Length: 50
Image 1 (cartoon, rainbow, N blue to C red):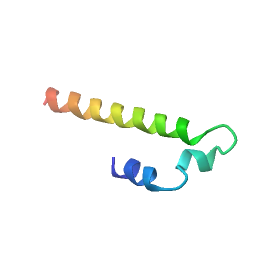
Image 2: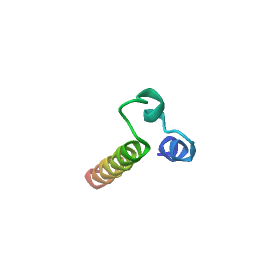
Image 3: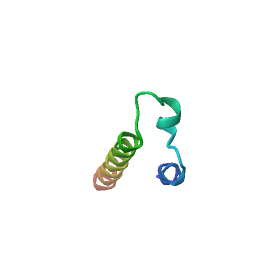
Image 4: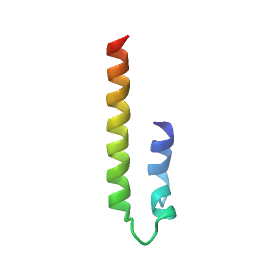
């Protein structure tokens, strides 16, 4: 999660750098927000299962 937050602080997101022709900042941000949601859902699921 910290790495995702640090990526948001950069002028260009890692995905924008790696795929400059096909990825816009808006798309890269949307994907990072989705990734955060998935990680939080998994953490919540595993905490409930314990």
